[in-house]
Image 1 (cartoon, rainbow, N blue to C red):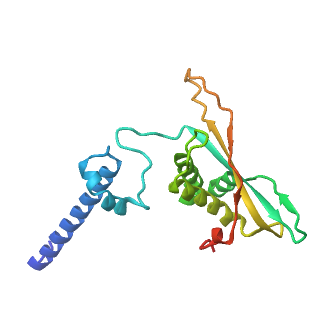
Image 2 (cartoon, rainbow, N blue to C red):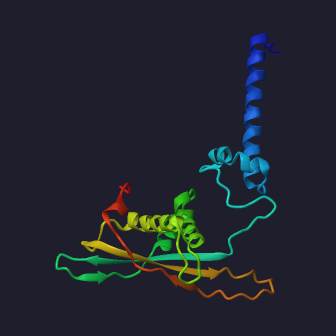
Length: 209
């Protein structure tokens, strides 16, 4: 039977205590992040975000999980200008289908392929009031820029050899059908929201690579 020396036992005990303490703090931070807002979580919100984001992000709240109940599709359309000065409107491109193709059959799909478009659309809708004539604040402008840059990173500066002038989006939302045993009746048809044309400038490509 091996006998540990006193210094070795001290190192083992201190290491174990440090690991247990770190694990406890990490689990405590996760708990406060998903728990309903309280005095502690509000006071240390910045510290909690630093621990949780982006590797351990949660999109649900403790005691009130809210699974997704809708399918979202995002299409994008470009206007381009050729050397002859002719402006052309391109066909719609299904950005969501690109992400699904990258996810399907992949045992470790990218978090970006799974969530980036959906989060960008959620951000856009949360910052754009539905009532006509409502003023869009600075976060709304940021949401537009974010959605636009996601698409431009995929398209590049040209399409069919012509420079991109404008871009617009079509957002499709469909309620997921309930299970066969449920008596609930829902409309599973796709409802489309077509966004306006947004001009594209060289600044929109800054940092996209």
